[in-house]
Image (cartoon, rainbow, N blue to C red; front, side, top):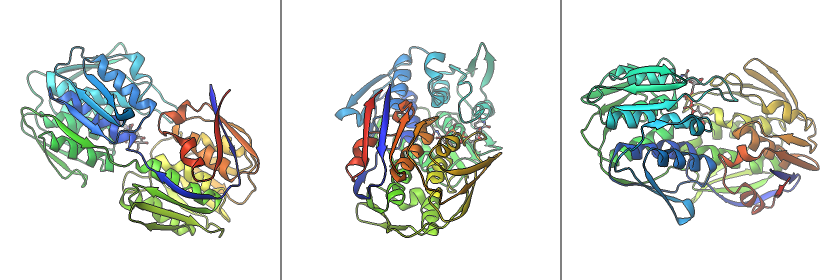
Length: 421
Ligand code: UD1
């Protein structure tokens, strides 16, 4: 198994291109199930999660061609030949549940394995199912699978999510495009990935209003057609690399970056004393040796501070002058990176959903282990700032969400390599 070795201390200077969003691509791909015509995605990221979704769609009867080294995905689903998403694929990736709504809406039945537990908390799928039930689906849980069916078409309905859920909003939104009548989704997620999905569905002929507002109105149509859609920039990859020059000092331009995608995060960087400026090609982040102020950060649904940048922010706050507080409000068990960061000399105290980070203790390279996707990259960020060598094992977590990490960081002067253990 591979590991990543980082030698800390180098200032970073240069440009990092930001890829298309993993989480947008993972919901845009199942949208191909909604139509018999081809759906082509450009600016797709090259990641193992995307390969898993490819495998899942192929198992259902779709054709998926990876063109231009995987940056273009040409999908065609003339017919869904198998309506069961098997446990062996679903267990690898929770986003597999996103095939449920499209298959049910198109053919009136679908069976999807329950995703099971996951490292960052219970992560149930009850809201996905409730929203589909509100549209007339009959759902039964049997043998670890969700069995869903509907007589004829789904029916437009009004549904209010009790908690904001990105995945449940995506499933319901896709299903509602082919329902009979109008659906109104209230307290819906409004992440940029939701807006991107709505834009793609509209290009496919769907009638959708308000995707960026939290109340989405969908007028169902009988059929959707093919389209070509460019995947939105990955705001989590963007935020992650915005931290690279903060960890080391220096200045890096993030190509394709957009401030509106990372508003709450960029505000926090500025509050800490980091410079963030918009450029013609993206965003530039600069830290010129000055100290960092401690912060109070609370994770929230968009447009609040994203939970997917919490681990990386913790790495930065280890360098701040004083005590910072990180409150995790989305997932109950998302501080597994804290003990690993402590191995590098960090002073972090976790109490329930709150982490107190006492910044300013010198960081030392160590052997650490990635525990999940975002945790893995927080260890690399910490390694950039630590004295000596940090080796990060279990990098398959990293491969799920970050393409060419080593190339992107070394192009800016980082001492980082990937080795076979
Ligand atoms: C998506 C992202 C993930 C991100 C998360 C929150 C993808 C592929 N993944 O995950 O990277 O961290 O949004 O921004 O896009 N919940 C329920 N019942 C449900 C569904 C969710 O109680 O049926 C709860 C969850 O346990 C969690 C909260 O709702 O506490 C938000 O989860 P959700 O927004 O659904 O996350 P995902 O869509 O799984």
